[in-house]
Image 1: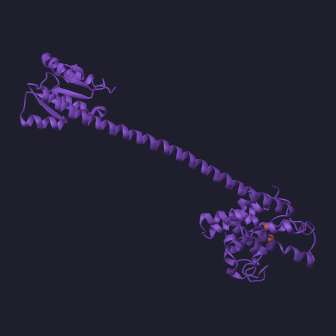
Image 2 (image 1 turned 90 degrees about the horizontal axis):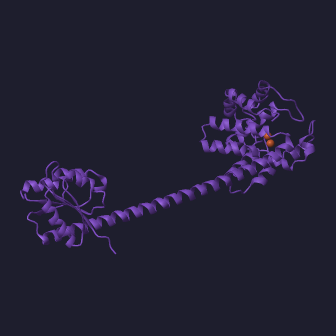
Image 3 (image 1 turned 45 degrees about the horizontal axis):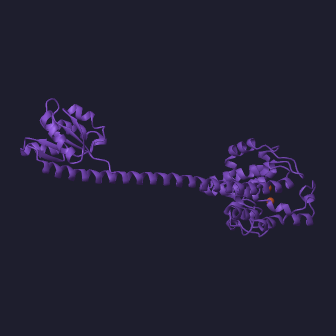
Length: 361
Ligand SMILES: [Fe+2]
Ligand SMILES: [Fe+2]
């Protein structure tokens, strides 16, 4: 059964209150009554659907009551019919200005009250339905937004795990190759940080710097295919051994080629070009100057500097100064002269990287 509408009757005159109450109950409404403005305000909480409000009352008059009701967010849409003996135009205009919806003149006529109340209650019901509908929609949107956010978080988490796994696999592959060669993973740590430093100094974007940082450790991955007795041989290499060592850029490229991963593509470029020389006397292709990709030229400097400053089976570790002195002779022949100058100008940062990853790591 549909809930009855509840109407609040506000009038200081007892007999008018009772008359209105009788009429409204006859029309099928529930009623509440108040004999002044303050009582009226206190009864709004009783789920009132419409208010019949006398204008002339002692204390707070009807217009002040309307004003006080409209100030409250919960009741600002509740229909209010002013019951008035006054019918001057000014009074009506003032009442509308403060927020009354309609008027009934005294003496009160049953038909008039029926028509006015029912049309305003219909309007109120339509408004309430609209509000409820909007609230329901808001709730649905909110719930779906939360669900969407949660699934986005899951997707990002899964992507991050996948990326981490990808990086970890590459890293382990690199470590495997490096252990075979130098017996330590700290060489690739340092040379990749030197490479990233040079990439930054060349004003590459942070994405490109990151790519060089993570791809440069792959430069010697081809040494997986080089016999250990050659890699670890303490003395000079004969021509045959030297030829075998020189295969490692091509072998590295063969390991990494045709990958969909941009990281492995960059790694492949670095692997195949890190032994090219500025004057075209390097291997495997004999590329010259800027024919050599920037990443290859960067890694050449980072790799040689770290090899010179580290212990290798065939040599002791040279000081930074001695290593730079040796490399200086290759600026413009072995190394890109601009990159080499950038490297020597930033020895403070190079030393910081060396302190962070000492050879014994
Ligand atoms: Fe190499
Ligand atoms: Fe290396």
